[in-house]
Image 1: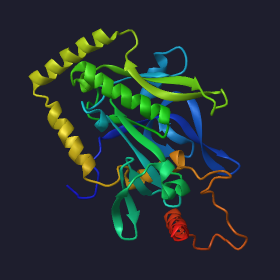
Image 2 (image 1 turned 60 degrees about the horizontal axis):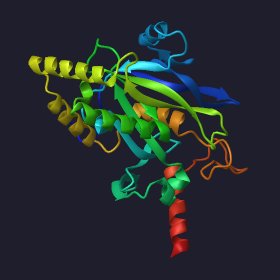
Image 3 (image 1 turned 90 degrees about the horizontal axis):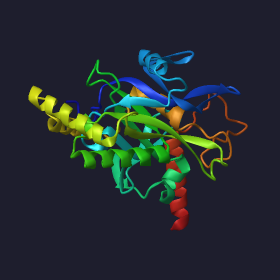
Image 4 (image 1 turned 120 degrees about the vertical axis):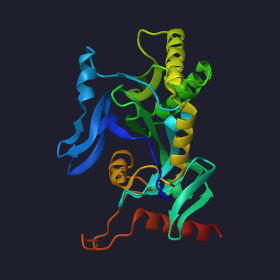
Length: 306
């Protein structure tokens, strides 16, 4: 196995609740109020729709706001990986990834382990737009029992809700989380920060028309069939855990630019990390990366504190 390369679940498609649109010559993320399933191929018009997108839409009378799923692993933290992340918007590369206690940061000396006080308490993170970032892998079709769809989000509401549900479902099922028939659901809520307009987040529950007791019975039946066939769920979890631990950063190099564009866009105005080009800056001028600028700011603030 190549060292430094995170081995992640095979992905056959994406689940999104938004898209990238062009406004005033800039490509900006735009939220949606329904799910969209796409392939991993993108063209001029955006991500190409997955065939399951149309199949699921035909099963509903309105917008696609519920998707029947299963998860790959019994360990909730393998299905949903959440951390505080900071991306270099100039290169699309991750600069710093932490869990609120410790972090891995890309520096001139390579990947270094450092304390992580969370974005609110980190000067480096505040200057660069560090925020929570999560990836959830789910199974939608039985055609490929190891091929998952990935849902990425930087929403506190989605991350907190999904994490709670996964841990609760594992607890009530007696560690049969991977055998439970579940459903991704899009919910709306209003807050003072949204000025009372609805915002949408992703939840996880038992499938429509099923009670929790019925879902648990189905999970026990599926687990028994898998064990009889020789399926080793514990070994699968262990293999996934080792694969994730094999690399410092999960997203592959060819995914990072798209992730940074959709979830870590350049502020349009007023942000502490917004670009402020001078009159002499031209397209040919070599511009420092965001990481360089953050290091300079952190060093300056550290000098003032001293």
